[in-house]
Amino acid sequence: MESVKAASKKTIPIQRGSFKSKYLRKHASLLQESSRGLLISTLVREETRALGQARTLLETYFLELFPDAIPQWKSETEKDVDESFINAKMPMQAPNDPATTETNSRKDRFFQAVDTACSGVIFIRFKSNISPLDFMTAFIKHSEQMDEQTRKDLAHSIRYCHRFVPIEFICPSYLPEIISNVPVFLHEKWPQIQPNETVALLTEIRNSTTQKQDVIDSIAKMFPEELKINLSNPKWTILVSIFKSCCGVSVLPNYKMNAKYNLRALLQKA
Image 1 (spheres, one colour):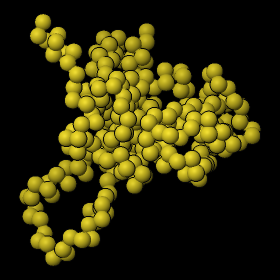
Image 2: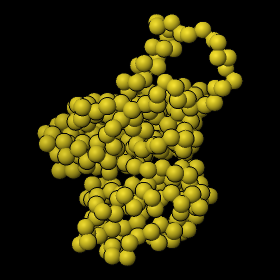
Image 3: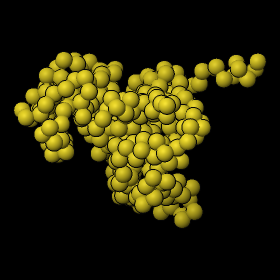
Image 4: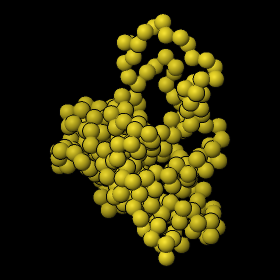
């Protein structure tokens, strides 16, 4: 009886200051450097459990699927904040200094959790030469080769996670910034789409004053005239996901066929 009560007990909200400061990079960091990753949906107040389960899945399968992956972090000379006020004559850190050790160990990591400033959704930034879309494509294909019990166990292990949506590009969520930045990204992606293939535009907005119809109208104008629109079952989906001050954009193949990247639904599929 006690175990049942423990299992149903809610975890510490991910918005709590102590958790954010210890485990999450600041939301604004998504706009301070080139960012791409997985936007993972979950239940409100279950974000901490979802974060742990998502990271376990990534750390288990990432190197198995991409053994030659290379971590990509900022160089030692680049800083996330302005440190010009620090005395340049401060003593150098010893080789066994804990701060140095932590920095070096970070260089071996492939992921970084970032605050989304939204309930019910977490973001894991990819810090490697492998894109989140490439990982999800490879993982879905790999999961199709698993036996039924393995798929069932894996689905249970990510029971607090829902959709694992790849985000390939992030810019500020203000409409003028979207109009200015998104065409540059899409221009690189249009050649992937063949003349006989169909596309659709999907927009999601969380915790933002940006109006959905304004985003749809602005993005739709960026589509080449020769593209064929199919809203029911497109080959390609242009996903625009706005969360707080960030606008994430992706060009995703077979979005609906892949259950909108809901991994549990894919793993439980017969």
